[in-house]
Amino acid sequence: MQTQQNTVADLPDIVVGQRDYDELVAFAEALGGPLANAAEALLNELDRATLVPQDEVPADRARMNSVVTFETVDGFTRIFQLVYPDKADVDKQRVSILTPIGRALIGLGVGQSIPWAGRDGHTHILTVKTVTQGA
Image 1 (spheres, helix red, strand yellow):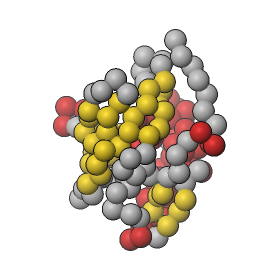
Image 2 (cartoon, rainbow, N blue to C red):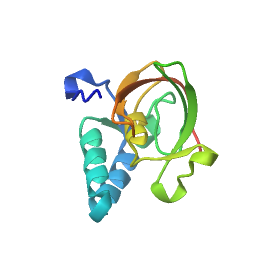
Image 3 (cartoon, rainbow, N blue to C red):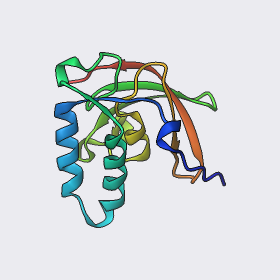
Image 4 (cartoon, one colour):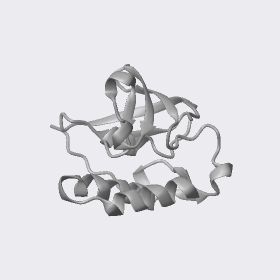
């Protein structure tokens, strides 16, 4: 089992809109109990973001409600919309911002790659292929 710990220097630059940032921080800070660790991981991810006004987030950057197509190093292509947990539904290709893959996607741009910890305990790498802004 691979358990590599990445440093911030190893991770790609991410860009997050101020409105998304404020809403996600408030959301994460309100969570506790069994979601506390996921909330803390989301806050850590947001801490490394470059913040810009919401209307200045580049179109090719994943933000809340974006539909992101990405490829894993094993050649699998996935398409997910990045949503809050209450809207998450893998069967409808909607992934929660609290999941490892959801946290990995926020703020990434087309062509960027990032490692993320899968449910299997291994570190995987994904590369963003397309980003389409959702509703």
